[in-house]
Image 1 (cartoon, helix red, strand yellow):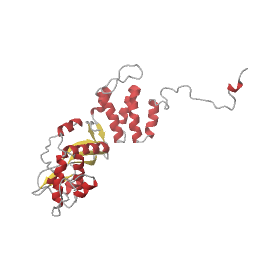
Image 2 (cartoon, one colour):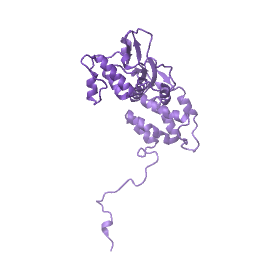
Image 3 (cartoon, helix red, strand yellow):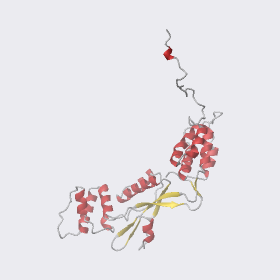
Image 4 (cartoon, one colour):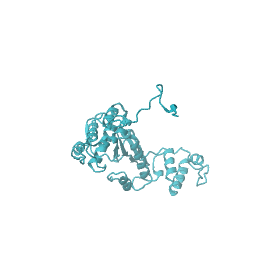
Length: 294
């Protein structure tokens, strides 16, 4: 006997979608689908979409070239970097969509020759080495553009440009790492190499011990040590001044090579950082070629 319960009825739902949609449909994310979704995406979504264009041969490359004029700098920069990777051979071979020949890099090279377009109103984030001024009593760290503009220099010691970034988060990370290298008197040239930057002409001679810098001499750092369960390395007498106690603790942490606590203490007593990030607004259209820092 046939089991009729297995036969479909007029009221049963129909399961669809078993046949694959066309290759270029929006559902599969084909080139046409990418073009449809891209204009309605936000900046972050657009950045995530762009690498998928490399799946669609010449059509995808042409799309990336179009995006070099996108209103958003981050989107422009992502397209530019993808095209640069093609031009430099860092991207897997891209096949032409119709005749299966290798895609020629000529049009890519032409597209990236000028560099990345920066438009008026774009914001980039520059990392600077802080200025360090000094007089007969102490050194002063000037760790912002505002501090530098307000300060009257006693000597011709000026801040130095280090590198420029499109993403603020990247600039902040590099600045923090740069500060650590300078403050701990680490290998500055090796740091530049790891950041894919040309080695800067820079001397660490001005980096003295913390006791050389202008700071809050009234700060009771022994309380700071107690809060962190750190044994104070000296017997503190009633006649000892705060600056004397600071001197001993600075020296103790330096001898222990405890950079983390030393940097926390630097911040506690008001000594500035040795690098800073400054946002800069582009005032006129220009092109830049180096995107190692993106």
